[in-house]
Length: 156
Image (tube, rainbow, N blue to C red; front, side):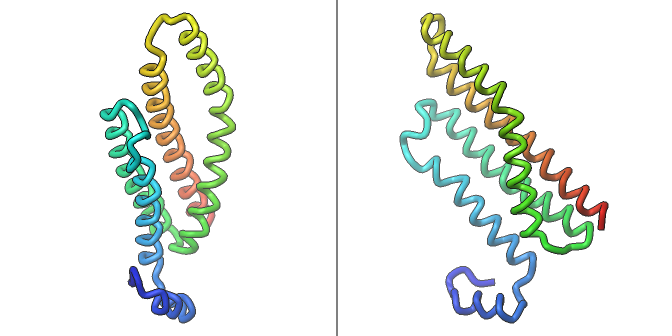
């Protein structure tokens, strides 16, 4: 496995010697980078504790999700992990987004009403709400995606 020698990687791809495990590590690394980069800026969240918890959750979630889907795939026919992960994850994300869109809009309207009435400090409520939605959506996404991997393996 190479991290910097693009010619060696190209040769491995051309010779079809790049293993699924190597591809998994490339995917894991790029996913972790994608999970961490948004938290490197100072303006991610005013509540640093929530931001740190969300960052730690995001990193752990990324590792667990990728390891679990890779494990499920290897318990089956061990084929096409990357193809399955990319396609199943996108469709799972779209379905989850469409399902959650209505409730998120409703709660957002309620929070706007609360903000306009000066009942509570809106920004704190909004941050906790966004944090809760992130956690809930991540768990739902995990369940949907791992179940899809299991169903694909049952058919093969």
